[in-house]
Length: 575
Image 1 (cartoon, helix red, strand yellow):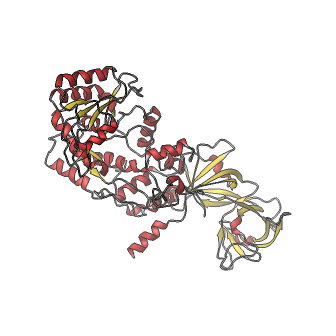
Image 2 (image 1 turned 120 degrees about the vertical axis):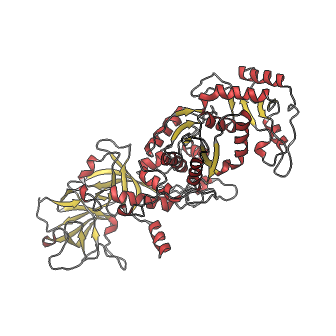
Image 3 (image 1 turned 30 degrees about the vertical axis):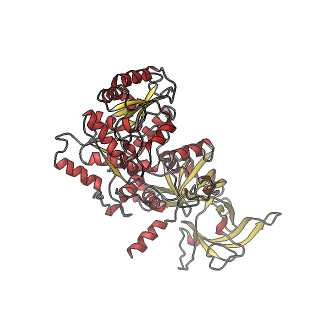
């Protein structure tokens, strides 16, 4: 498996640069290994998602860093579910996360759950109470917020802050026993209500929540807060490098405070920039809203930025890993163009995708001088980028389908495709010249009649004459039908959160993010398409088979069009 932080390929597999992209995370780990900060202990990382939704493309960066860096230094990575919020977590999400991590190309040393550590976390909470460093507070959530103060004003001590150790122990044990209703009491760390860091102003450690947990059932009715559970879970697993995104930087002093005051294994937290991509929203809360309100068809809708959505759309884990490796890691948040990800995906698919001819919006082309009843086969390469992929034989006949856009009865200026009296090349077949058209009662063209040059077999004229257009086609008598789903960006703005006053991100949805074509005609080889296969429909784009497919009812998703705007940007930048 290639490291998730490997450098970009620059579009040429023979010039693959396998040197790792430098970033400060690697540099820090290398320094810690050199100085034996953790003695002879191996590098231990973890990927710690909360199972309250599906993983999205932003998580891919964290996954590649956690697993890739550990692998690079001969270490190990745990997959740990931070499942401390039973009201939002489900087994469905646990299963999907495991599937996505493996699909991306990684596997874990140990599968862990924060809920496995509930007994130990509870015992540590008792220790902090006995040490006079935690207390039970009866203030409501609103009152706690009011007492916390602001960035410019210190907070106020809770009137319950000076309870005796004995009373705090009694109340906390009764909280665990289920004596009190939800929201009536919390356990807070006793730190400093005047700290300039609001996270250090007596943060809540436990709250009462009579809710069934997806793993522990009704065993617990108090649950640890994320900030309390996370660092201690790292310590239990002896995580040496706990990498997380920059929004947790202000939480690092609290992370250290718990570990230091408990005297446990000194895991260290390191923050890096999160992955933000244009035309993409990575809020799990918003993504859940889209699913629940049926804005999309589910978490794996190909328009969703979830890894399952990208997988269903036809993206490959190799391209995503290369993309993540190319952007590295820093301490400054920014935004990456979606075209950059698409560029790496096109580059990958160009090498691996089998070619096929598919007509999305068919128009029948009748070759009048083609021998009646004659059929032949033309041999075409399965992938010109990969000679080992071999060739296939595609049937050709006197009636074929072409794209509606490839014919104009009255052509506009500089239109080089088929029109009356104009000659074009049918890919790998013959030169044809349009003669006349057949229209229905409404005046719509339903057939184009043409003639062909038998001497131009293979798409080359023996007299050397040139044509300016080459068109794909599908033999009408051999074609199979399929539904084609053309996907585009889900949002119309590079920053979907940029909304007008009084509106939300739904106002920036792209009304044309999905177009469904039901009359496409495909060459017959695609009848054997498999879910794991990738195709380049020539002149059209990259496609894959959708799981909705059934025998005789194929459905293909467009992964990407053929146009690569990022490659042009790169070329211009390097000029």
